Figure (tube, rainbow, N blue to C red):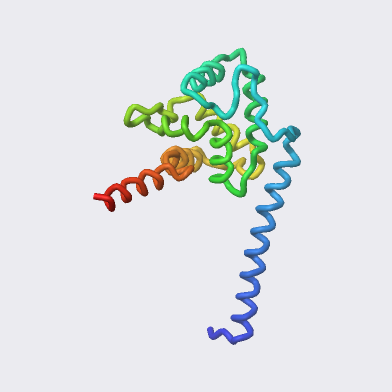
Length: 181
């Protein structure tokens, strides 16, 4: 079967329309997730004993103890709902935005998924479950798999040292030192 130039043109226009529709659907899903969540607060709703973002390892321990205590189930659910409103364009951005609200860069540098090199193991923390539930509570990410969220969390913690240009400053300093030698 041969395609005429007009048929090829029509197919390319249809493909372009489909791409635009996909973008619009993503935007509508994002906006509807923000409308569906009743909390409009910009900062996550947390108990008074927990200040987000977490700024110290002691505060990480306090958060973990809070999350493990079954008596805090209602407050934990409010945290999840509040974190879910942070938003993003896709599962990756939602997960990264939530993690950015949960941990400062300094604390993030002390955490990895498996806890290698003396770091805390996020994969074994209760905060991991909080992240999973908050991502899935976002209307755009209801069907996010644990594997997807895990992959994005691993990457977010791996890049913690790069954020804020920390590695670039160190590299520039070592390059300058070599140049001076």
